[in-house]
Length: 315
Image (cartoon, rainbow, N blue to C red):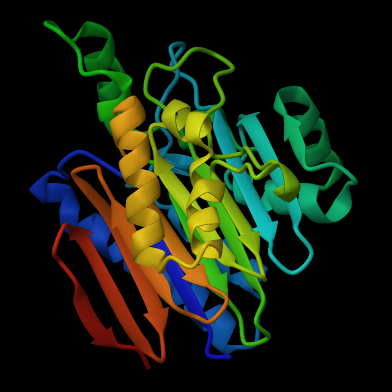
């Protein structure tokens, strides 16, 4: 099986010109790192964790050190990861003072009998696993301080939640053994209530047909979502999309159907990245833009805006 990885940097409103190139290079670095892991024989889980870690370490993205701030000016992060081989999964929410929540989510998956830890329980588990804490201010950027101030003091009619703050990062991968995985990480929504949890860490068991922030099953494929979390939760966007794939739709058709349903039913905007068990991949979004990159057969595809795709050769 030829390995493939697809990475997204979150659905977003129009990205300013001064940030666009930094965002583009960040998403390319993440996809390149994930693909390197796959080419070196690493698993799909290794690859998605590695790619998302790159984005958590990049202040241009709403995850890790670039996370947006809650109403108190603090960073609270959510993350999840899933192995399509055995449906094992791990998630954390309301995490503070940790540079890479996706690494903690993987430890939940591999070192506990649970799927989901939150807040203080997640913090105690991180300490037990030897994950170092970082000063809270290390995760706070000047740009996000200004975003919070603007959100709190913006005059006139604010945009509804479904049209703003759509940042998340995620990755899906297929390794040479035919295993798929996904990982998603986020700082959430600007000015959110303390303790608010969105779609990112929400994985629900397969037989219930649910799953919001992402899902992975070797019999179907893998998906990572981004967008307005509450809308994604209400329609179970990840599993809804994979359901359409199970029904024989192409990845593009499935993505368009589920995103269209969320938009028409709830006016919710977002995006998805997918990889099938056969190695096909797709990226679709309804937000103004979504940074993305995909690597397969030593070629890197990337873009930010609609109808934009750049292709370069990888070494």
